[in-house]
Image (cartoon, rainbow, N blue to C red; front, side):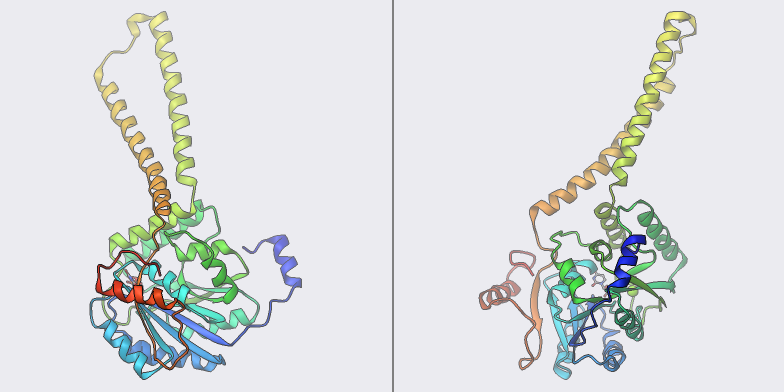
Length: 359
Ligand code: UDP
Ligand code: MG
């Protein structure tokens, strides 16, 4: 990102003025029935003052099975700036955000959580940073109002990721950000399926700046990221953006095999020079077999993780499927698919979810 030479060259080329024709705000929603009305009250009023000609709020329902989807339909009816994109099942937060990016038509695009932990009132500061010349303004969490275990886990994860990652992923940032169209277009050209959005955002480059904010507590409801989903996210981050685990096991393998070779030579010499001092005993043998067996399994697991990811990409499945797009009939449609595609999608809604047709 920002480093010496590139920065000074960039500084002499002023960034293009911010195009304020349309602001798209992408909000992933998974069973957020308790927060939607507050979101409806706070989100538009936070961005109306920013001088965009047009606003669109894309609520991506990630297979919600509470009242969220019917509430979203009511919101669309009340205010045509709201649009709903309903996925066929729960594909996960990152897939929901990625689908939202596909549908966003804004010249400026914001990604924000639906539980109001990312306060919509911070969006003007992010847009300000774009106005001053940035292409991406990402929100950096200053304080988190979460339990100590979660805070520690996030703290450790971001430092581990940044320590071993092959690209510069900023610390303590989530997906809450504001991007110029050209950044979104660049992200959309990346075909990978395991989408770790904040990693892809860092990978595409451009001029990125952090804006600190205080992360609020959830407005209502319980976290939708289960421990399993958090681990899956951490895995996506670590294995999609690092080669370090494989390098580490290569180094461990090299060190262990060199050491064991030296020990073998030592034993051979002992056997030849002083056979009476040649060590006997199974305990050390068994321990070393188990130890090296463990190390080998661990290494295989790490290599396997990369193989799984290659396999996933090889299958070429989309990261999520869209069941329905909800928008007011008279508004300019953001559903850019062709009529046969839409029909196929409608059929899909009635048949088995999770099969055929990409978003
Ligand atoms: N979310 C989603 N799909 C999921 C899990 C979460 O779309 O499978 C949404 C959720 O509704 C919320 C955002 O992603 O708007 C962040 O989720 P959550 O608040 O549970 O995560 P945390 O803030 O605990 O990291
Ligand atoms: Mg949250």
